[in-house]
Amino acid sequence: MQYNPPKGTRDFYPSDMALQNMLFTAWRETALRFGFEEYEGPMFEHLEVFTRKSGDEIVKQLYNFKDKSDRELALRPEITPTLARMVASKGRELRKPVKWFSIPRLFRYERMQRGRLREFFQYNLDIMGEPSVSAEAEIVAAAVSLIESFGAKKSEFRVRVNSRRLMRALLLAIPISEERLDKAYGVLDRRAKTDAEGLKQLYADAGFSESERDSIESIFSIKTLAEIGEKWGNNEEVAASLADLHKFFSLVNAYGIIECVIYDPAIVRGLAYYTGIVFEIHDTAGELRAMAGGGRYDNLIGLFGGEPTPAVGFGMGDAVITEFLKDRGMIPQYKKECDAFIVTFEKDNMTPSIQMATLLRSKGFSVEFSLKQANFKKQMEAAQNAKFAVFVGGEEWERGEVKIKNMKSGEEKLVGKLSDELIQILSGK
Ligand code: HAM
Image (cartoon, rainbow, N blue to C red; front, side, top):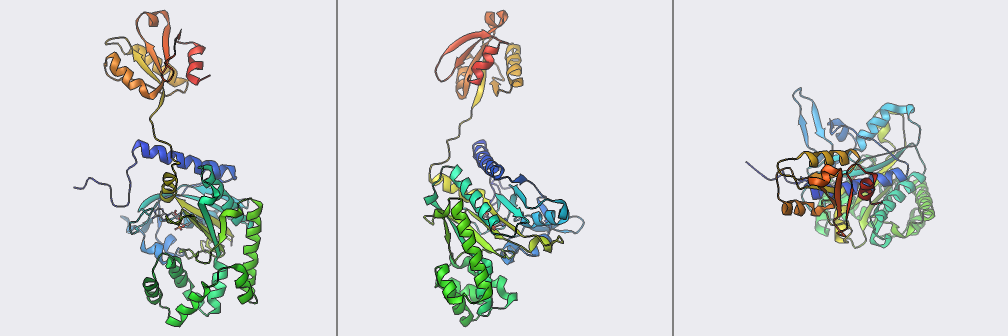
């Protein structure tokens, strides 16, 4: 018998839940500020939903199983295919652009490392039905605004941007055939996390010859968009994707966030469905793994039988952003707190406590009292995590009065037990 949770999963004690609630609240607030609506899907899907177009890496990490009717199913490793399926099945009913967000619980059989878990939550923002890069700019602006809302400065993180369309054009020009592009993206996504020997192995395992490898690597000797324009600008696809990137950067400038958004040819993304601009968000110091990743995926909704619908989005896991905020002291200390603790002078009579608690709870206050006979000292100890102590019982109670004590200032007052004054004091007015 094992008494630990399975590897890569977490128990959420109340202090962990408080942190999670803080994170989810910030996620939701940012989504709503940017005009996104919330959606959800099933926690497991037909296996095929994920094997279709997510790419090798995620397929290797699937928790898949057969149910009792022999259906091939998988716990969701991401929600983007579900979203594409949902949008595809509504089709024209949805007014475009559709701006939706979700906070799904996801499952990936990952190799364990800092910031990577086997069960995690991931914030997703997606815009569907908008072909221009204004959608990318809006999505990136929302991500930046979110991270800033925690108190982080723009200098502390970087949105690193590249274009799949550009990479595709450069790879095809080598030439790497269309069918092998997904393999190339898979290698390139892991490029920055691998040493020279490991990288050679990755290329070889993915079936690339040494000369193909050298040609692909030569793309990375070029660091700026201007240089790419000079070298490959007469390739139509390269020119078109460069124009997209320039437009994107000018919009990002208009949002006032250009200082934390940079072009980075190393960003390719592991997932197979991206077709345009792709990006990842990293801490500037480069100490942590990616906090978020996303991009444009114009073919996925069509692949699920919907009419072709352009789409852009990103996912942000709960683990890395939490590490990032913890490292910077941006997570408040957890403390259990309630509005009022009822302290009773009565012996063997819980009625005043219950009546007072019930009344105050009905007004929306969080209220506790001792569930067993406890002496005054014990009750006062328990009242320490309340904003106010309300003393009930004895003659005062008979007269229709209670004493209320502000636990911080020590100030006390006698008030009517049903009075507006009591409610006002508890409300902090
Ligand atoms: P992804 O790059 O696989 O993209 O994941 C996005 C983010 O989710 C990562 O940057 C990381 O913060 C978090 N994440 C991924 N795997 C793990 C893990 N094992 N443990 C903890 N956190 C993790 C996607 O999933 C795309 N579906 C995102 C997207 C939405 N693209 C368009 N729309």
